[in-house]
Image (cartoon, rainbow, N blue to C red; front, side, top):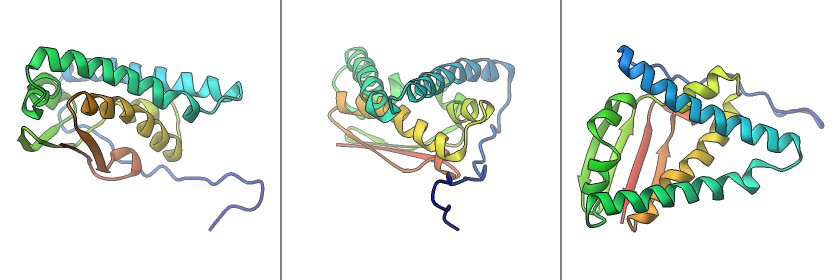
Length: 174
């Protein structure tokens, strides 16, 4: 039922995000990614405490990071084909860490399903609500959208672990 006037809506913790593969090396790499996600949460939290909504600065900043990273990946991987993006960013190591399945990959399409997200895990550990996690995910995905833009592509996210889905479905397309 909707909250009464002046009450904040409460979201139950309904996000399932547990890795299937738990090797020590994977856990160490995931902890590094979790630390990055904790930075994002804490920066946004402090900004909001100071009266600056995260939506006013964080998406643009994270997209700038993605555009910079994407430009470097394009240089590293040759012509801006999504096959090159898969090889440079979504390497075997990344596939293991995020428990990814590459569903389709050609010059103009890259469809990947992620079965685990260390960023979501960090936000869960920090005690974020499902609502906060979904918002932080939207901000973090601005980096991936910037990378896609560097490749002349658009990124769609029809499913996201942060929204309670069983996977993150990243769909890059030209």
